[in-house]
Each structure stands twice: as C-alpha cells, then as structure tokens.
Image 1 (cartoon, rainbow, N blue to C red):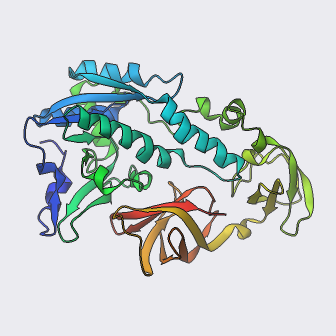
Image 2: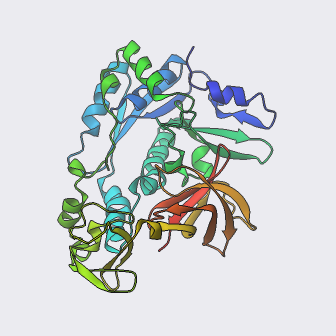
Image 3: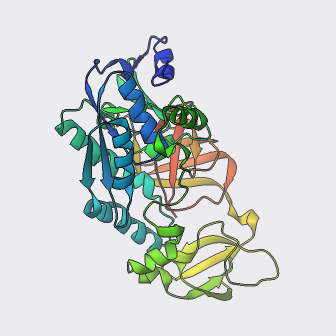
Length: 371
C-alpha cells in the first residue's frame, strides 16, 4: 500500500482535521514538479499508482542547469508528458540579484526560502492550473492539512526529522497550500530510496545536493565576483568589540557570523566573526562566548494563516535550517516587526537568515533576521 497520504489520513481521525488527500477525484489531473532527483520521481510514481492523470513540469532556472535533461529521464521512465518552463529571467531577478544584494549588505542570504514562494510554487502552480491540473505535487518532506476548526490550511513538519523541509516553506500562502500536495511528507528518505529502487527508477542512487543549486562547486565568492558584486569584496579592517584594528580583511562578503576558519588573520587566541558592518566596511571579531544572544528582531515576516499576531505567543523557533528548535516568546512590534526572546541564549544568530516559528508540528510562519 502506498504511503502517499498515510499520515494525513490518520489525522482525519481527529474531528478538526480533513486531509487534502481525498479532494482530487480518481482520474483528476495532477502536475508533478520533476527535478530529476529521486524525491520528485517517487512523488510522481505514487500519484500514478493512485490512478491520477499525472503530468510532469520542470524548470530551467539558470544557465548551465541540467534539470531538463534529468527530469526528461524520469518522465520517459514513468511514461508521462513533461512540460518545461524557462524561468531564468525571473530567477535572476528574484533570487540571484537578492543573493548578491544581501551579501553586499553584510547579511547572509537564504535563497531557497525566497525561491519557493516567488519562483517554484508561484510559477509552477500558475502553469499547472492553466493546464487544467487541480493540484501541484512536489517532493518536499512536509505535510499540509485542512483544519476545519480554524478553516485554514496548515503546514506541518515532515515526519522524518532528518529530512523535514518545512523550514524552507514558511513563505507559502493559504492559496498555494490549498492547491499543493506533498506526497513524501509521511516518508523517510530511506523509504523513498527503497521504493525508487524497487520500481527501477533511474535516479534511485543519486545523492542529495547540499549546495546552492545555482553556484558551481559551491564557490559562492567566485559567483558573486562574476555577477558584479564588487562592493562585497572591498578590503577593510578586522576590529575587536572596542573598535581596535586587528588586521585587514578581504571584503565582508567573504565572512559570516560565527565563522572561525579561513579568516586569514593570526591572533593569540581563537577569534570568531561577531558582526559585519557594511557602512564602516569592518568585520568585528571576538570570543565564542560573545556569539550568544537571547533576543532577535525579524522583518519581512510572513504568517501562513495570513494573520499577523496581535499579542505575545509562545513558539519554538529555528534560527537556521540546521538549527534545533528553541523555546521562545514571540512579541509583535508593529506591522512588520517581530521580537523573539529565547528561554536560552542562541549561538550565532545570523542577520539575513530566516527564523521560522513553530507550535508543535505546525509551522506558523517566519521572517528575516535583522542586524
């Protein structure tokens, strides 16, 4: 029996929840986003096995991308039609330029968080609906259910904590979630790989990418220089917390908060990057203990419910994709500011990264950490 909506169907036992799984009638057209990887391939396979009319769609996001060739292999194997969207211009405008601007401003960007709502789901879903599909399915490890009590779609963590990708999806709206399926939300990566291997899917052994998709060999400094981000590579001074000059740096785009290795400076004790100051073109260094803080401010906040909190609420928050959740109080500070106060100080809170707010399994939303 396919695991497609197993967890979602279990949630239906709770009277307040309804699963999106039972909405598409048998034979309905569903568009599956194909990347050429094992996750998207199994996503499409499970939908086919359930009797849906499945078509694939893939995107070219940047020059040199092999997504179309890889996705075509999957589509050919599954014997489904593949649509192709050239989104290089939109991706450049919305993601690559944001990436360069953010580094030049002394911040550390999170391109996937920007790409999901502005490129992947926006353009793919619009295309799917124009083609007569009732849903867009992706290979993300996350879950979406409809909560009858609050009459909203809620985004939930994937069941596999090692692969949960809900952090990257906090920017999705009610409209997008109402038309989206996450068939892998209840599965582990090992289960998906095994299923792909049993079906003979070509990319069953393909390794997961841990790099930014549009940066060759993960050499982001070379990429930034090639894209004309000269401001981020202007030489300046390393200073300590008092402003004392410690040495020369190669440009603030070469560093991130918490960094210790690769500073290119020899001191009498280990030094860590505490702050990037683009106005003074300085990199502030200090001790590891100086990296801990119990408070952050976020802007560009998005809440999946569409409603900004009107009062303080307890949450669990993640300050980066690989961080553990930490208990905190969320305080609204106006139309686009959130103050988060943690029970325990967090290490290396990094401006430019996303902070995501959870309550249990549910993703409430998130925002960009301010300096």
